[in-house]
Image 1 (cartoon, one colour):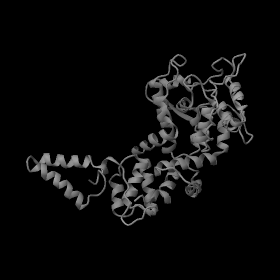
Image 2 (cartoon, rainbow, N blue to C red):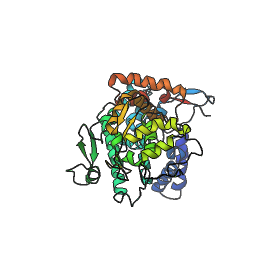
Image 3 (cartoon, rainbow, N blue to C red):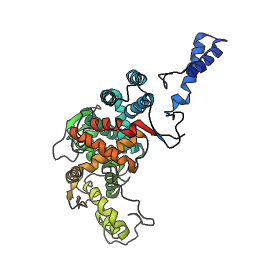
Length: 405
């Protein structure tokens, strides 16, 4: 029972003994144990992660989690699984809530291989990696794209995030780190030479490589494109929402998409020219003024993340633009410089997104001081990912819960 859900109580044992004796009386010892184990494994406490309010707490009141509930919350945050023996023992001893103990356990758990579940699940949500299986680029335009490349895209992004986490690097390195992970299939797609075999290996990137950081990863570039072309709008919106935490509002109703725009044209237009017509609508202009320069900076990547110098119509790529603060952007390198100059915004969004993941709920205005406090404490450690994680697990919202009873 303890490994399945929590330390066993007398009623737990009585229930299981009743199942054991029911089968044991007409069968064997093994049959009795088997039925008792079946009872444990079909219990809602085993199948679902539950946090029960303690008796006497009125609905809407905030209370501190018990050490056992805190152990469960911590293990599911970093391991996506149940607490191990060390974590459970500290909880049973009533010591886990102590700040130094809690921080030490978070460090231990981050160093454990089981923390790769955090990379797979958190990065999978934050970076939209889970959408890759649903992406089906046009097979006529992109005949080389398939499941093998999609899996390589996801693996590269996971290994990259995991390297920043395990090497305890500053969170901003997610935008600037000059390395990535490729196997032969992905290296061929990227044009990286001298990589053979199916196994992934770390490769150094030159300082002027467009592949530096998250925004050079094929996974992100593919999930932010259309099946038959790139989309500066989708890419710009994704960066605003997932990197900077400043999503634009939803588009107004009855505004036609680029494909539905019925204006008569006399020549083949570039995507930039079509978007300029789109921005002529004053209702659309305010949001597109922010999104489009970001998306245009990534136009040197096609819809499956290959680097290119001409578009689908063999017109030269124009990846220039002006960010709303007046900064000039030209291509992936220029975009990265602008994003790094807004590093505080990136760190605030990353911390808020990670706190949302840890709590399993959306953040509200009253959570803003917590995010600021986590970043303030982490600033003394260069905003390393580990410092942000420890700031989250030692924060008040992580150790508290509002009663639902």
